[in-house]
Length: 177
Image: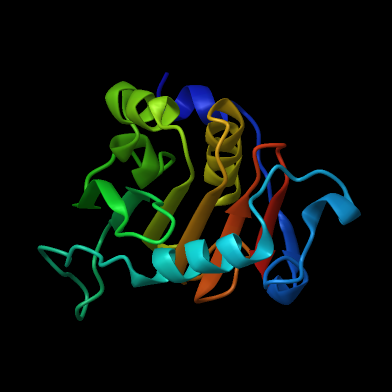
């Protein structure tokens, strides 16, 4: 199963929320409805761990230093320990203008590795996922089932700069306003 299979023809914008409503020591997700996500303190730790993942530098730049491509760092979240890197790379090639960089990164082998993980996933990428790729992350979270936290530096497709996406195993998608 590759990224095209995960995304299909779907798009998901997600719901812009105030993150404090989902994180912190006193948050009980089951009071609001079942999200399948870990408790608020663990979710906070996952967000901090995703922000701390280092991105691979762009190997080449064009147009005054703006890189063509996206850097990704994907890891398994380990509570109280160092996250286990699954892959960390800059993706600068894609099959065409209508194809996302995620299509190049998420091949059958990588999707299979992520699906086999028992636990949660954290991702840092230099650009926020588009609405089509958010559908892919949502499906990946549901397949696990995992909670996937994606930290992105630059905004894209309606998402602001420096935002966090939360993909719940139940299919819910949230991002920081």
